[in-house]
Length: 205
View 1 (cartoon, helix red, strand yellow):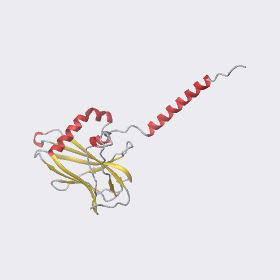
View 2: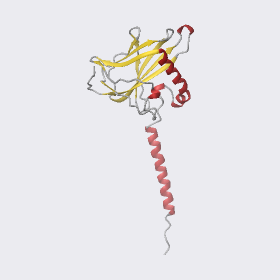
View 3: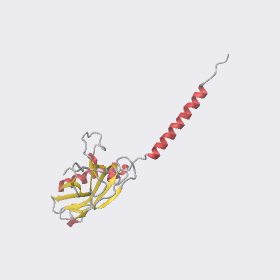
View 4: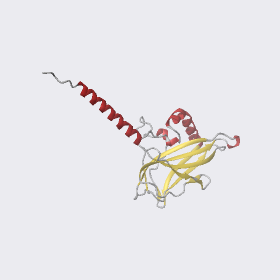
């Protein structure tokens, strides 16, 4: 009796399985595209190429400004709103084990405050922009508006309303110059903070 040859069936099975896995991979990639580096408002490749310059401008900002950043609503000041340079965020640096406290805020009535004290008299803040961004999904960046210089050293956002619920991160982009008399080049500094937006929040005053 002649034995059956199962090799053709096995080969066809392997090929069909390979086609299936490729299809699954393409579907997953389309649903979860590689996210642009929204923190620096450029594609990841561009950020990687310019990361040394980004760090240099951030370090310079830290050298010429003392700053304080916090969130508030009509009840008072929120605790644990830690804004840091995104390059040092644990999510972007697996080698950094520190945990950044997550701000728990209401979707309505929230305002951002930034107090800036310059250590270099010729420096100037040109603009401060405020954004809400997803931690995981691409194309979710929301512009929350430009901050207003309400006092000499204090900048504030508009009151935020109807913020989407869930886990997000706030991103701040600061445009500044080091020497306004010499028409110096505009530089950038960035900060981010994880935030959990939910309906009911207990404040720590």
